[in-house]
Length: 138
Image 1 (cartoon, one colour):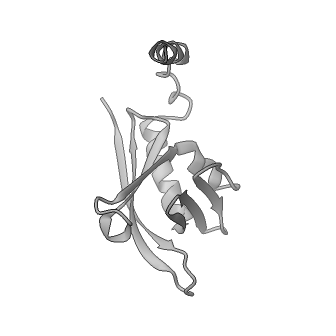
Image 2 (cartoon, helix red, strand yellow):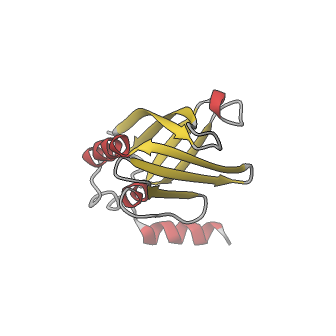
């Protein structure tokens, strides 16, 4: 049985304006894909009609709550004791989103209650996955 965690949060898109723009975000986690979290933006706040979903490692949020973390398209870092910044990079541009740290911690707590960090990799059979990948590339 899969466990899904979903939490709606209000982030703040950092802009040149002093106050930023409120952005509704849905954070989701599916125990069938234990390493990943999804950050879902509705159509009204994205550049795409169907909305936008960013998928990245759960442990990126975990590490980013304490220290700057991330490479590539997604970076997470603490801003202060109560706020955390998520930076999303795409060909269309850069978005800086400010989240309440407590909301991200609550989401992580629920995901780790669903699938703990020490067992999230147990279902991964890297040798078989690599063998299958090499078989497909021939």
